[in-house]
Length: 145
Image (cartoon, rainbow, N blue to C red):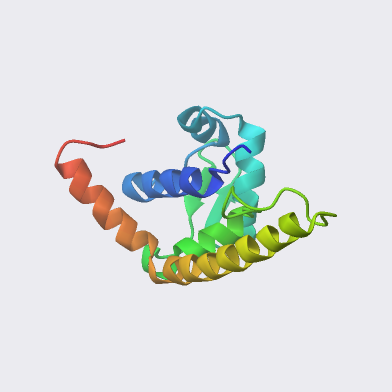
């Protein structure tokens, strides 16, 4: 199963936006991510709808952060980009005929649900300001990305 990296990629973009305090076009962001501008616009639209970024049309237009970094959590971004599955492990067949597979699925499902709730609770405690602070420390140490 292919790993969904929308969350980490959008966090990357948002931290660059915050650091440079300027609008980034969809094309610039797509180049940064090795993606295409349509995918960028579609992903950022969810963050715009939630009020975390704003888009401006025109010559000096582009995407900007629309809220204070202290007011945006990882959970906010996770929900805004629409990640469908937090973990890439789990059951194969949702309705197995095999009792062994059903027992395994039930146990894995329970464990993964508990882990997901704990992780999402932790996401709610981490703001973009926290990440920006870590980013600034790394950048000043010479490892900007």
